[in-house]
Length: 525
Image (cartoon, rainbow, N blue to C red; front, side):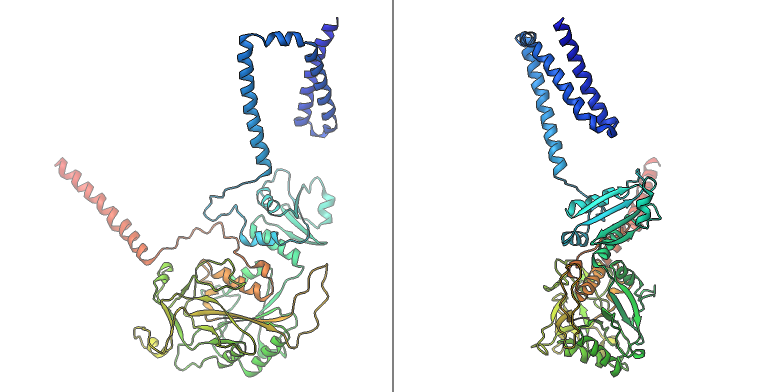
């Protein structure tokens, strides 16, 4: 009778274990019963095994039992190895992105923003339960920083929470940081990181592009226009505005930066005075001066004098590059190409190629000026020089270096900073954030076309411009390489490679097919 009861106890234990497993996977809402059933089932099974110890010992004494034990041990070893691999895999995440644009890997900029977090960021994704668009991307954010947590919410099941955050569209991501919220309705990395930057900063710095002297237009879609870089600035959490200095009494107080992009005429003395007053109170200035080639057009002496006060010399020349690097992007020696960037916060870890269509030299003044020392940030190759004989260039004469020219490498960009003499008292830091030191920052380039719509296809032009603006805005944490467009499939070919492809596809391959046909016809004949 006891033996029969113990046998039934064994079957009961097996049934309880299977019931626990079924609840674990099929009915997660009954999770509170899982542990009790599993323990009860294991106890019943263990009692049955203990009651049968003599029979079990006899079964393992024969040759077949030894073979069976060896097979069971092998199975247990394999299961143990698989369990160990699974354990390691759940705790050490390793991914390989084999896409050409690395669209499934976070950019340097996103990684830098996440690594610089000081406070927790909570991400709430309002989407249907079966919407998987955001999970792969945001899992990378949480993996990169332990301060980031993600919660997925179905607004149809929790409408009250969606209404609390003002969510009216499915696929809305809400970033929460220090009590501030920012909504994003895209699963793209650039848009998500932009939303993260906005909620961290709590404000949008305002940039003013000067107008009235033939500068680049931030709304123009022409090849020489700036609407593409203006859109990139907006994505980097900047407000872009225009300003005519001749029509205002002072640079607005909300101006975080003034940008002068390729003026064709010089600024008037009152406008120069407005810029000087703006710099004295801690202003930030980006000046991009194109070379002057026309004999009847004067140099921008007023802007050159302003830059010279800040240790920057804008040369009256044109930089030529005969290294052959320009052929990589299908240009000639009038478009110097740079891959060398002296050490500076703007160009930290920057190793992309940049090109400057028709540029002048921009170098630090020897010995400094006013106690300030400017730094080079962009240099051309040793096979370049700054041509000072502009008449020979416009007259069609072949360019060649002589004693009056500046030998390469030639500096095309300079950065300088210094204390503000009339800066207002700094505001008390908010939310525990450190107060920024008020200082003047100026960057000058000898070309404005490198940021135009026509030149932004060059690898590093966009990132160099945006890094410069972020340094001027004292946002060094945002200086990095940004996400690439996943649809960017352009292939850069040299002029020689283009010719070879033309000859191969138009002449050689069709010619070989024709010869093969003639040969076949001749043999049959």
